[in-house]
Image (cartoon, rainbow, N blue to C red):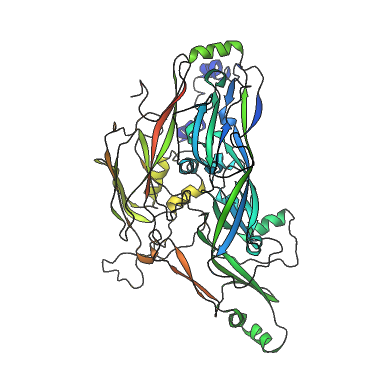
Length: 608
C-alpha cells in the first residue's frame, strides 16, 4: 500500500541514490532558452469592435508578433457583458417581497464562460484553417464538465461551481440580481465579467508553447451566443450569512429568520425555462386585542390559515409571523451587448541559437493531438416504456468515447439531468458497451464506469456537480412499489420524486471505446467511411408521473380565491429526441513547409 502511495506522490525515485543526485537534482534548474522578454500584451477584438451586440461574429488574436514563443496555456480572454433580464411567474403574484437587505437573490451566468462561444474557426496569418466547430457550446460543456475540481476552482470568473454560487461567492462567471428588482421592474440591466482561458477550448487544450515567430500568428473567429445561460435561486440563508460576515446588513431591526427548508429548485436551469423560487413573503404582526389575539395565542397556524389560506413555509417569532410562498417562474434574457472584449497574450523572445535549432526541429512535422466533439441528433423520441430501438447509422472516425445526452427541453444545451433508467446498453456494430448492461444510471457500478471513462478514477478529483449528476437519484428508489401497487404482481415500480439538494445537471452517459490512461493513441473505432449501426436501449425505472424524464414539465394549479398553489404534471410536454456526442481523436501538424494544419480525419503516419 505504501508503494502505491509513493507512486501517486512521485517520490519513488530515491532508490537509485547515484541517479537521484546526478540527474534529478542537477536538472532542477532548467537552461534558459528565452531572452528575458516575457510580457502580456492585450489585443482588442476586431472585425466587429466592442461595444457590439451578442450574436455577431468577431475575431480574437491568440498571439502577438512581439513574442517569438506564445504561452497559450497562460493566455485568456476577458469580456464585460451587459444583459437585459426579465422574470415571469407562471401566475400572478399574491403577496409581496419586502427585502430591504436583499437576501433574496437570483443568479444568472454560464456554467463555464467559454460556453459564450457558439461557433469557432481558426486563422494562421489570416489564412483560414480547415477547422470548423458549429456546436462549440455543447463541446465546451462536455469538455469542461469533466475537468478536475481544482482546475475549475482556481480559475477566476471562468466557471460557476454550484457550491460557489450558493455561497454567494464572487468567483463565478455570472452575476447576482436581487429578486425585488426583478419583481418591481419589467426589465433589469445587469453586467457580468467573463474570463475565458484559451485552453478551455477543446481544440487547443493541449497547446502550451506555440512558436508563432516560426509558424505564424494565430487568431480565432467566434460567434457569441446567450443560449448557454443558466439561472437559479440562491439560498437566502447563505446570502444572509455572507452579508453578515462582510457587514453588509442594511436593516438589522428587520432581520428575517429563515426556515430550515424552502423547496426552491436547487439546481441550474437553462435560461428561458421554469424553476421554483420564492414568489411572495407576507409578514403578519400579532394582533393586540379582541378575538384575533385570542385566536393567535390559541393556534397561530389556524389563525394564519384563516387569513391567507393553507400554510406554506413559515417562521414564527414572538410578535409576528413570516409566511413564504413558492411558485414557478421563468427568467428570460431579452438581449445582450458586449462592452469590453480583449485577449491577453502571454509570451517571450528566444535566444538566436535556440530559434535556429527550432527552425531545424520543425523541418520534421510535429504532431499535436487533440479532440473534437461531433453532435448527432436521433430521429426517435422516448416512449413511456423508454427506448427499444433508438438507432443511427453513420461512419465513425477515431471515436474514443460516445456520450448519450438526454435534453428535457428543446433549448437545453448545458443542463442535463439523470434520466433514471435501467438496463441501459449501447450497441456499436456487433459489439456491446459495456458487455453487461447498466442495472441503473445511478448505482456504484455506473458511477465507477463514468469516472473511469473520463480519467477521473485516480487522484484527480471530479467536481461535485459531475459526481452528483451520475449518482444522486431523482426519485425515492427505496419505495419500490407505490401504495396502489401489489408487490406480488408484475406491475412496474414507482418512486416519489425527490427534491434536489445540489446541482445535478451535468449528466452524461459515457461509453468508453478506447483504452484509458494511455494518452492519445488513436485507439478508437475507425470505420474507414463504412457506416456502422449504433443503437441504445434502456427502460425507465419509474413509471407514470414519477418518470421525471418523460414528464419533465411541472405546472401549477391555482385557486386564487383560496390562495392555494399546487403542482401537477404537464402531460403534454415530453422530451425532445436524445443526442449522441462522438469524441473523435484529431490532430494538428506543425511544420516549416506547411505551417499549421488541422486534420479531422485519418491517423498520422506511424501512429497505427
